[in-house]
Length: 215
Image (tube, rainbow, N blue to C red; front, side):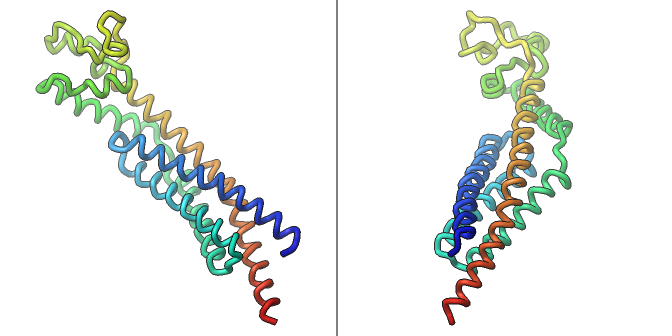
């Protein structure tokens, strides 16, 4: 194996490590948002993150063993991964309006539950540091004499209560979450494009080496 091929192998394995971390970050984002965000976004993030991570592991094995078949499979997985990433960025454009509407609908469902089961909003109010559906005044409007403890930092009623409603805070949280995921996809596209080129270069080198050894 020549010096150039050796450098490409080291370069590609370094990118494999970064690619694996990128895949794990997408899986982590999907896991954090599980049951809190649109199913289509969750499935997309899990699928893309899984392909990225598995292809990185397969690539490391194929490159280290200088296996033509494994490295070629790895190269085609990278190509598919690149296409999926580009579709995610250009084909299925990130929609803040859709995310905000989903968040508002989820909070409305919890608020409807709160009307018949006091305490249903507690988890949202604690996680998003908010109070009420649109504002703390929502509790006054339904005849509650006091605000729930989840409307206060660390449930300490001696402190000032949260002023923002949960629709606003949850929408902001979801938009920030998926904006980060969208930015991460751009990183994945750049890394993957380089890896596709390097992978097929090594496939050619491995094949030539195998033919040379057979003779």
